[in-house]
Amino acid sequence: MRMVPLDDGQLLIRLIDRSEAHAAEQMRVDFVANASHELRTPLSTLIGYTETLREQGGEIDGETRERFLTVVDDEAHRMQSVVEDLISLSRIEAERFSTPTDAVDLAPLIGQVIENSRRAANERNSKLEVAIAAALPAIAADSGQILQLLDNLVTNALRYGTPGTPVTIVAEPEGAMVHLVIADEGEGIAPEHVKRVTERFYRVDTSRSRALGGTGLGLSIVKHIVERHRGRLTIESKLGVGTKMHVLLPVHRS
Image 1 (cartoon, rainbow, N blue to C red):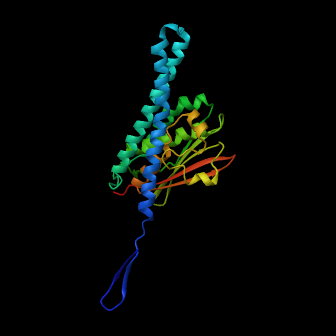
Image 2 (image 1 turned 180 degrees about the vertical axis):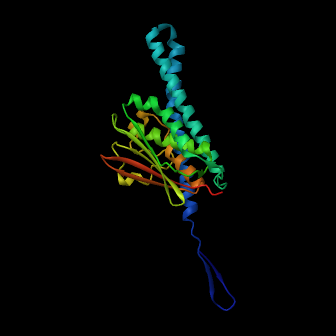
Image 3 (image 1 turned 135 degrees about the horizontal axis):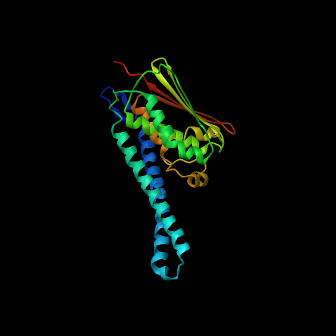
């Protein structure tokens, strides 16, 4: 609040709401802390195992050495995934003011993601069930980003769905939008977590999430892609039932 006296004895009072600036600064601080933590953990593991291999290499049997090298390789790939997702997120944010205008057919992209996810689905004994409307219109989109969105959502559904249960992908027209739904039959997300799962590095269950893989950035990337496309993301989840991710994307207009 700022007050300035006027010549006639009155006061000019200016009120400034700094809530958004404060929230943005807090997000920045949290992001730096979380990113540092996500990179520090695998880095510490890498250093520990490589030091052991270097200092005690002659005393370690072949089987143990191979196990150590597997851990090193896994942690290095984990760090690489975090860095790649951070770069991807930064690129999407930089393009947020440029609305995609290309006409993109959603069906082939869904087919590509299904094919890429087939191995993971087989490992969890989960069927990938697809229902695409016959006359699905093209969307105004960046095909690469929509492919990334689909891949992240299907991967999440397979990761957190109960093994042996299906993952469903539905795409249908809804007015001037195309409605995409990716659903799993898993543990679901508690209401207090639903609003926060699109935050960077936010994890409902930290230990379980890390055990299942993932960088903690997948849904944040999805959210930013949807926002860039001037769409809408809604999360519907029930504990013990499963989760449905609803994405509305604008239809392409000639």
